Image (cartoon, rainbow, N blue to C red):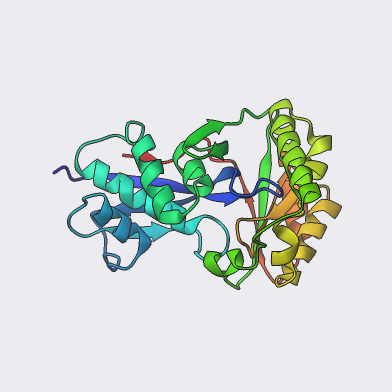
Length: 270
């Protein structure tokens, strides 16, 4: 059993408009776990439970620079961190443990998008167990608006329909394809249309009106695209790095505006 390790995992924003459970971006806000710390996390913490599921032994200390319940991939980051901590304890590296960690984290999460972004970094497209990083055709910054309220993922998913119309399915498929192409080509003029959605956002935003105001404010201030981050209630946007501070300043005071880089590294063990 090896000691002296630390695992660092990025936050993430998932769904990206029409790309429900399919596209996510890693953010440079991080959750860290280690065997050393002032106060070990409780056994019910998602990182500790994942650590135990992975065969980890002993205490696990958790330190997060972003909150849970806001649509920033906290549970996925915690579970990925706990699973990788078990690998670190047995002397394995993050890269060699990626595939197994993604499988286990997806089983725990119920969907793979946040966990894939947390593991691989960058912007990822996910289908089943297949993960591909989307190459970015130009530099992008992310502006996130994080309100004080929380949203439980399970509660937010219950708002979604059991079936969608053929027209709405075609609408979302087309825009998801456009989004991937626009990101790869750096076609920022197409990104706003590419993040339009008919399946999940309107139903969730009906209960988070301040988030809708934040999304509109992002777009009005010049963001290339804006979306409900994960299950919400946070919002996120792609923008030119030179415009990020100005866009953040235009957002509602009810939440905290944060300018972020895309985390290109993903989860690491040191």
